[in-house]
Image 1 (cartoon, rainbow, N blue to C red):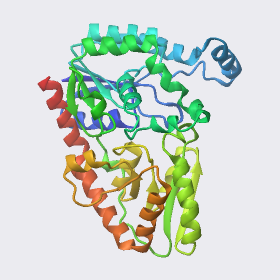
Image 2 (image 1 turned 135 degrees about the vertical axis):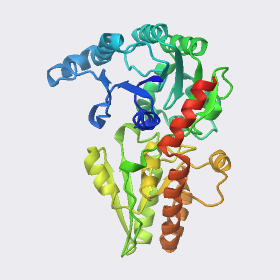
Image 3 (image 1 turned 45 degrees about the vertical axis):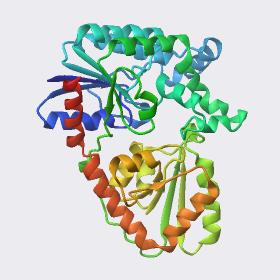
Image 4 (image 1 turned 180 degrees about the vertical axis):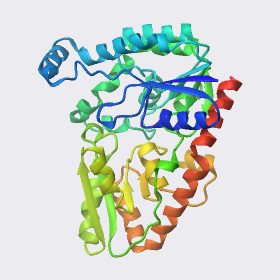
Length: 379
């Protein structure tokens, strides 16, 4: 089959593409390379002209006055110019309801063009979209990245972009997708409950992980246990970083001779990876139900990751032993879990091995590619 993947989120579509190609299919990925992350794509619609330093001040001024980003307009134009290369595919899959990252009116226009020029069209529920955000706002006690926005009005700045999914322009995109696309696939348990009742819901398929690029090194605790916390200032509250920081402050005082704590804040990816590779324990996020890409890649490397692992996750995979630590926005809980591991280092080694085995079994990129093919062909 000829398959077109539109948009990239972490490395989901890159890993899926590799699996599909190895299974004998012709696959092209078009996407926004996501700035400094530089995700590999075949056809790139990353804005370049309006991201030049000379346009920084005009861009900000225009955005403040009109709430309109010139760079997003450029993304739409670049995607439009790619349309001749985006025709006659058997399967097209969008990574999100706003995969093109342009203005909502242009986004809808371009989605319609893709539907017109191709055969079967699917959507992945990955990251925020109208469906998940609507579900989160209607179920405020449901563990999600929306919950921290309820804690204090001062946090609203980080969550302002959430509102874009409820505006008229995006709701039109959502309705068009629900009435036109052939299927909707949830990628982890943060999205299943929010999407499972939609008529085009096609089931749950875990993230594909390309383990060949992730070196597993059996953990060895020579002296101190190394704990790593990588902060991204743009998602500080969504990930519950303040809970991890408070827990680490207590842990540092309690086990000062037994632990080394590494904390980074919005550093370039190579620096982040170099420091995180040294760690035994990685603190990921406290408001998720399942693991995102960062957590899964760390587990593939054998790290003990504090992330989402709620009951729906453990039930689905029939887990009787932990492959990661379910993180919660509760400082005392996090301190207790960290303390247990520090006092029982053999458990760190055991979880590390189980984490690696879990990724190989449940997230192998070839197995996941086969699951996507079955879903696409079955709908």
